[in-house]
Image 1 (tube, rainbow, N blue to C red):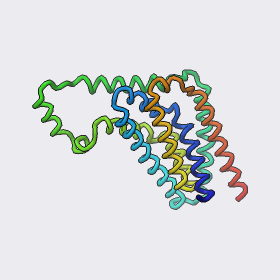
Image 2 (image 1 turned 180 degrees about the horizontal axis):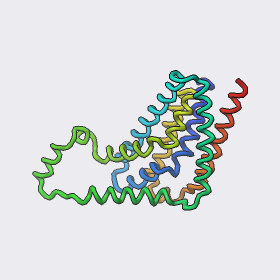
Image 3 (image 1 turned 120 degrees about the horizontal axis):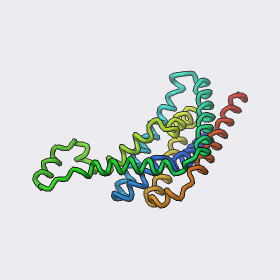
Image 4 (image 1 turned 180 degrees about the vertical axis):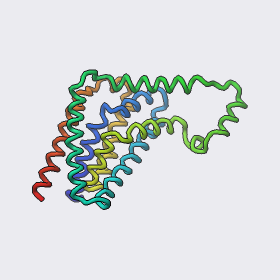
Length: 228
C-alpha cells in the first residue's frame, strides 16, 4: 500500500471518528436502536453513511479537474482551519447534552406521528401494503427510515464537507477506506451501546479533539503549500 493511500486513510479515519462520535446522526442511531431491531437500524445507517462517503469522495476527486488544483488546495486549507475553529467554539459552548436531547425530541415527535394512525382491519392493512411505494415494498420501512434520517442528517454536515476537501487533497481511495471504517466503528458503537453510551460521551472533549485535529490538518496543508 502506497504512502499516499496510508496517509489518506489515517487522516480520513481520525477525522471521521472524531467528527461522528457525539454527532446528531450518532445519537439518532443510538435512539433508533432502542426502538427498532438493531440489525435493520445498523444496516440502514451504515448504508447511508457509506453512500454519503463515496459521493463526497467523488466530489472531492472531481474538484481538481474542474478548477485549478492549487485553488482546491487553498480551499481545503481554509476548510480545515474553519472547521477547527468551529469545533473549538462548540467545545466551549454551554449545553453539552443539547444535541442528544434535540435528536431525541425530534424522533419522539416523528415516532408519535407515525404511531398515531392504526389499522384494525386486516383487509385494510393488506390494501395499504399494496398501495405503498415500490421502494417500501422491497425494503423494510425501518431500514429506509434509518437510511433517510442518517443520509439527510449528514448532508451538508461539516464532516461531509471535510471529506470532500480531504479527497481533493489526499488519495481518494485511502479517504474512502478510512471514512467507511470510521463510520462503521462509530455507528456500530452507537447501535450496540444505545442511549446509555451516548449519555456517557463527553461532547465537549470530542469537539475539542476534533478542533485540534482539523487545525493540525490545516497547518500541514498550509506548510505543504509553502514547500511547493
